[in-house]
Every structure is written in C-alpha cells, then in structure tokens.
Length: 327
Figure 1 (cartoon, rainbow, N blue to C red):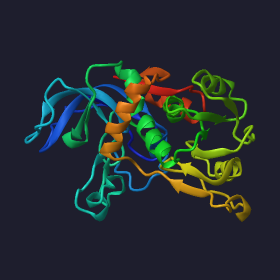
Figure 2: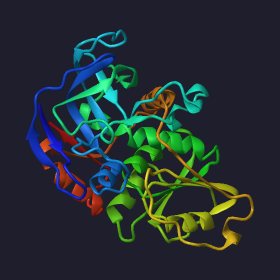
Figure 3: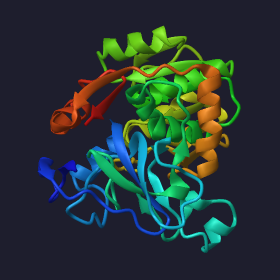
C-alpha cells in the first residue's frame, strides 16, 4: 500500500510504501477510492490534539470498497462500497455507550487520529463502524459527507428548530449544511472571512438569503448560529447575532480560546453548546437526509501525493467547498 504519513508534530506528510494491512477480528480492509480533507486533519498535523500516536496516517472521510474480511465479519462482503467516518470504535460498555451517547465514549478510537486513516491506498476499519453506501453517487463527491456532512448534521440538530440560522465559516461543512437547512425550509445567513467573495457567492448560489463577513451584523436576529471555523473570537460575535433564547453551537473538535465577553450578550437565556464526534445513528439519519435533499458537494480533487498542498490550501483559506484526495 501507499500512504501519506505524519511522523512528528508540524512535519509535512511523507509519501511511503508499506505492506498491505491485514484485517483482524471484526475488521475489514478497504481499498480507498477517495478521502476528504478535513480541518481536523490540520489540527492533527499541527499537533493541536493530544496524544497523537506517531507515525499516523490522517484522513477520516473515506469512501472505498471492501477487499478483505477479518474473522467474524457478517455485515459486509468483499466488493461492497462503504464509507468510514471519524468515530472508528466505541467500547460499548461505559456509561455513555450504554445510554445511547457513543459519541462521548470514554475509550474511543478515531479514524486518522488514534488509528490509521484514509490518506492511503488501503485502510483497516472496524466493520461495525462502516456505513453501507450503495452504488449511487461519485466517490470523490461523497467523501466530504463522511465528516463535514455528519458533524454538520449533528450540529444542525443541536441548533434546534429555529428558522433563521447563521453559519460561521463557510467551508466543507457549511456548504453541506446549507443545503440540508434549505431543504428543511430554514433561512441561512452565511458568515465568511472578510473579503472572501468566492465563499459568499457559493453560499448565495446554494440558497443562503444573506452572506457577509464574520463581524457583520445580519439583517435580522438569528434563532441559532453554528460555528465551524476554529476561531474562539466568533463566539461573542455569534452571541450578539442570536435572539433571546437563541443558541450558539461550536462544531469543531478544536477552537482557539474564547475571549472574555460581557454577560449581557449571554443573558436572555442564550446558550453556548459544543458538538463532540457523532453516533452511528447520526450517520444513518444523515445519509438518508442527504439523499432526500440531493446534496451536491463542491470539491477540489488532489492526487494522494499532493496531500500537503491540499492541507496548505485549506489552512490558508484558498479552498472553496472541500478538498478530496484520490489515490
């Protein structure tokens, strides 16, 4: 197999050849056809997440086909098209797993973070955490749904049922969630980096009713806001934009420190909540909703060996939509 491997914090990924991995008990090996590039991959490369087991292969928005089965696998077959998400394992025994909150598992494993991921030609995954995708849709266009879409879906649910929704950081997740929200009859207000006309134009083309810079005030109060950009300074801005009783959802796995802000902008029963990972039920529900809404992802495709370039363009804000690696 070939893979782009992270050997130490802050290093560029290196292209290496390894023996093909062998699936163990309950695992399957996937021949990767596409893997999306997520902002979480940037946090891993930059060493912003704890306890990274170097060397590690990043990537957790994986689409491919099963090409080998480990012992005991009954739910998948060789040749089946599947998707592999961020949550790669939960213990099934802790309080959270036993109460339907496996996303908060005390002993989880994460694809591309604590187990090797999809910036590779092959990857081994727990068969229980693979989503059957069927044969519809392009592999590269489907890949961003496996994290940007899934986390976007969970954050949209946590935002509540209000109709005026603000989205701060209009990248991979934002452009997917906008389409779901519009299908649900909501009004989307898109907030981007100042001067990012391409992202604002994309938002408007996908049905957003307004697009502006992150520090702009929308034309009316928001019922809720979702923050996808890892910028703590957006939290006070979003609080100022939501109405009394409104909610600000922080959807990233990592965010810079939230600055001090006056209590007045939180008062009025406004709430700040975070999203952590996903459940398998989230995946099943979202994939059905994505099919109903006929989600169209906007992607830029890179060959596997250009993973560092894809990450650099994501970090610098030089991507519109999502980046996808194809081995």
